[in-house]
Length: 139
View 1 (cartoon, rainbow, N blue to C red):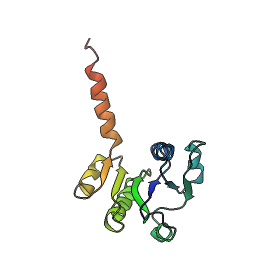
View 2: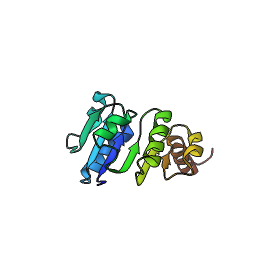
View 3: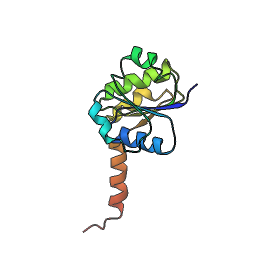
View 4: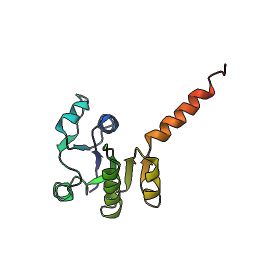
């Protein structure tokens, strides 16, 4: 039964998603290969934390982390790892909701024909800049 949100990568973005999901009463598993990254989680975080390499699919499968997920948020600091995990989540495990963060917007072409929703901080920052700059008077 798919009843988990799986967050891979507990940096600022991943930790915020995990914290918000936990506060909303979701069953959350947060994975990072650096155990100190879990310090970013709130004291009232009620989900699980797992320190492991998310690219080790045998561990991910044996423990049921990936097959029980209805949503996966992939937010490691490595675009290549994020691309690999998003393809695995879509192609092998058929996770219904897949969100992946890429620092490089050129990765869009690599997931455009899949059920993967990509997030690009560069584009979000650029849009925010344009929104803010529209209200600034030219001197």
